[in-house]
Every structure is written in structure tokens, then in C-alpha cells.
Amino acid sequence: METLSTAKSHGGVQGVYRHLSEATKTQMTFAVFVPPQAERGPVPVLWYLSGLTCTHANVMEKGEYRAAAAEHGVMIVCPDTSPRGPDVPDEPDNWQFGCGAGFYVDATQEPYAANYQMATYVRDELPALVAKNFRADMSRQSIFGHSMGGHGALTLALKNPGRFKSCSAFAPIVQPSTAGWSKPAFEKYLGPDEATWRAYDATSLIADGARFPEFLVDQGSADPFLTTGLRPGLLEEACKAAGIPLTLTLREGYDHSYFFISSYMAEHVAWHAARLRA
Image: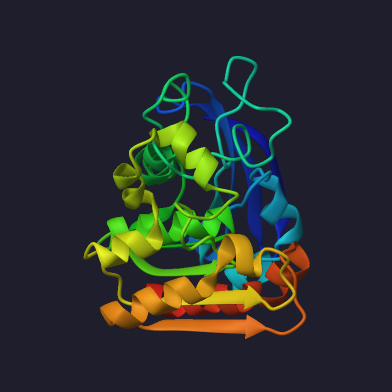
């Protein structure tokens, strides 16, 4: 693991790191905020998954999470959203696919399967690296994310309920298998058999029996993708049918940007911290 930068913030350290990934066969960059409480011992870990077109840097620079993370003694880890590099298959003119748009799936179709193994990377490889190199209490982990990253957080939580103590999302893509901006990516990554897509679709996972203790979702009412790509009501219906507690709040006037995310970031960090302490 290579350290690219570190800076003191709110008594802790914000770092950016890079390593060669076995899962993606590329160099992967990620950010870690280590709160000051880590000087006394291992601290719980909160994973943040970013959305389409983003890298680790978007939330690190605009998410405003460090004050809350330092207050509650929570480490926040921000992976990249996809593999990158000159040899990685990509569609440079398509912001909904390829580099920056890994959708947190393990691709099965060529030529993408060789590199786009983001589910394995986020679920297995990066946690092992964090456990080895940081004072992280891996028995206390939670996960959240935005948009495509909200989709990733929901699906990873539903498939790994013993791993994560809590899960929340900002404006998640709740049913990517049918949304116009994600369905084409699913077909390219996972193939034409839509039955295989269900493993990466929160509403389908719930319908197929996956369960999680509760979810917290914030959604902006002025989000331009609200009724086309995000459709939080579908998650509300799925959770109600399955008996999964869901706190879904429509934030009046907020859009899809980090102005929205940063407005409610501290609430999400505090919500996770309370469950990580339980």
C-alpha cells in the first residue's frame, strides 16, 4: 500500500492511498479518515460508496464528514467506484458505464469480467487491506452511499447482514435492473439473463428473501432523477412487504448534488455511530 497524501483534520488524519488490486487487476485509490480516538485503540469502520462519475475524492472533498466522524470516533473509508487505467475496457463518452460506473457488481461478461470485480473488491479485498494497515475494529462495520453507491450499500448490506451493523443511503438507485440509466450497464456487465441481475438489485434481493434490520434513506424532492432512475417508493414497497423498517425522508427542495449530501451527512454518521456502539 502506497501513501499518496495525509493531512491532519479535526484531530484525526485524512489520507489517500493506492494499491495494486488482485480483484480488478489495476491500481486502486481510496481514502481513509482516521479519527483521533484511534490513537487509543481500534475504532469502528463506516464505508462510503460514491455514485456515477465519482472517485474517492468527491465525498472526501465535498461530503463534510470529518467533523462528525471525529466527534463519534468512526473511521470512514471511501473506495473508488470502478477500476481505471489505459487497458481497462471503457466507454469514455458514456458516463453511465465503464470507468466511474462499476455499479459494485462482479462482471461476468467479456471484456469486462477481467477488471470490473467491484463487489469482490469492496466486500473482501479492501477490508482486508484496511484491517492490516489501520487501527480498525472490523467487528464493527457499517455502510452507506450515494446514488449508484447507495445501490451498492443496500445490496452489500442485504447480502452480508452479519458484516454490517447498519446501512443508509442518499438518493439510492433502488431498482437498477429496470432503471433506464443502469439497465444497459447491467446487461453489459452481467449478460442478457436478467435473473442474474437480481443479486445486485435491492428490491429483488428483498423479494427473494434477503433481510436487514433497518434502513435509513434521504432523498431530495428536487432531484432530477427522482422519478426515473431512483424511485425510492419501490424500496418503500419492498421493505413494507418484507417487514423491514425503513426511514425514508423526502428533503424538500434538495437536488442530487453534494450540497444535499453534505447537509445531512452528520445525521447519517451519528445514526451509524449509535448502531456501531450497540
